[in-house]
Length: 133
Image (cartoon, rainbow, N blue to C red; front, side, top):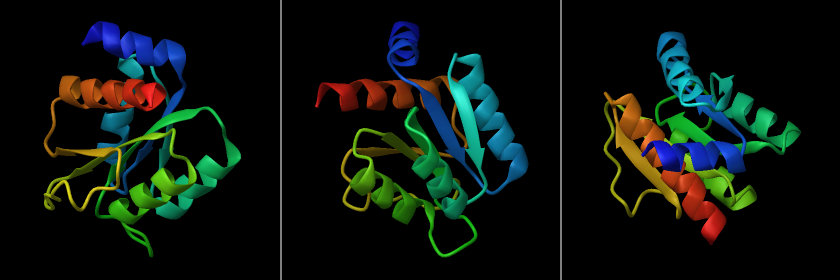
């Protein structure tokens, strides 16, 4: 796993963590930073889209499903995959368990609570597979 994560870090960019709960967002951000990723944070979908529109170095988005505002994490993921198809998207939730048919094409899901190693491995795999398409 470490080699895959290192490869993803070398080839790309930042991970945007989208989570409305500040402590959970900080914890996820710390996991990604410890794995060597540059991390950006957003508290909702609107903030995430604003960040994405202003940057070209984001390689992956890690988003919760349930967030305040007009757009939940699944809608955010679909928007990202439509506008920025090269960006990997990993979706999480402690309540919802969306089936594969609900996930946007190319996105993946990891349930809360997740192990940091599993989260990092999934993001790294999504980033690498996105480069191979």
